[in-house]
Amino acid sequence: MFNFEKADRPTMYFIGVTTGSSSIMRVFPKWAQALGLEDTVIKGIDLPLHAPAEDYRRVVDFIKNDPLSMGALVTTHKIDLYNACKDMFDYIDPYAQALSEVSSLSKKDGRFCAHAKDPISSGLALEAFVPKNFWKDHGGQAVLLGAGGSSLAMTLYFGQDRHGDNVPAKIFLCNRSVPRLDSAKAHLESVSGRFPIEYVHNPAPEGNDKVIAGLPPYSLIVNATGLGKDAPGSPTTDAVQYPENSLVWEINYRGDLVFMYQANAQKDKKKLHVEDGWIYFVHGWTQVISEVFHIPIEGALLDKLSEIAKNI
Image (cartoon, rainbow, N blue to C red; front, side, top):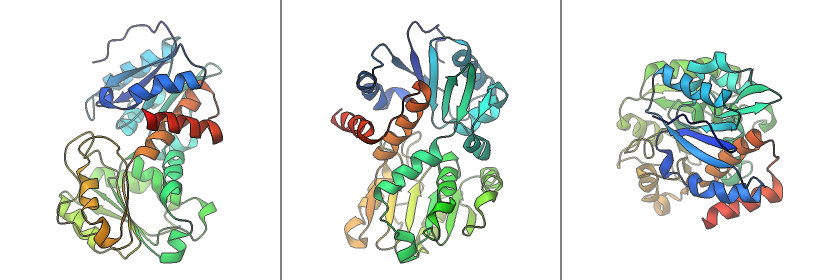
């Protein structure tokens, strides 16, 4: 468990499972210099998957009440932390309320704030590799493996009115547990009229293989589970068959990444575009850092931070 020592300099926290192996621990000091935050440090807080509520509350209480603890990025624990601590926040942004999750803890004007940044960061990452008018031109569908915060955020992103009819013809949310699917359905009610959403209970990877095999060409398949990063393995088997000309996105950028290697094995034959989680990593972190330190990060500054991260 994290050693709760009062911060002696401005500190940002990373709440995850295996934070020490994340690239952000090497990237953040260079980013801090570029942002004029030279005296600022980052510290990881590792919690087991689905930790007890009292652990989440202890972490949040510490950050909230320690003057030099500026805020935090939350990964993996976004839903569990929100459910355990939602009464501890002075402000909860609309996305966090809609998704019942939190990815950003920050302080502003004396208030302790919770934000869900994934609908923004996942949308920016998708726009970086999904061709313009991809859905309108080809009529493909999307399979989101996992019914956690990332999948919900992507579905909300697709459901924005600004996309018009350039959206997947259908979205499948596949998950190993029924309660998480039921929760996802309740949270996505607001966009259920934009496109059909099918909630699929697949306790084994073979079930995900079957859903993927039934997709039309020019579809999107996303690994939005923790498999390949927080836990070993993949949500699909080696026998999975991807539809031609499709986009396959592994939203993780570190770990054993079995899912990505499975897709790469078919990349040439099926004419796939296989994307890793690097751009998602950059947007996810810069969105939260911007909120925590009240610094707009976009345009040339975003490009500069991305280049710094690539070099590291």
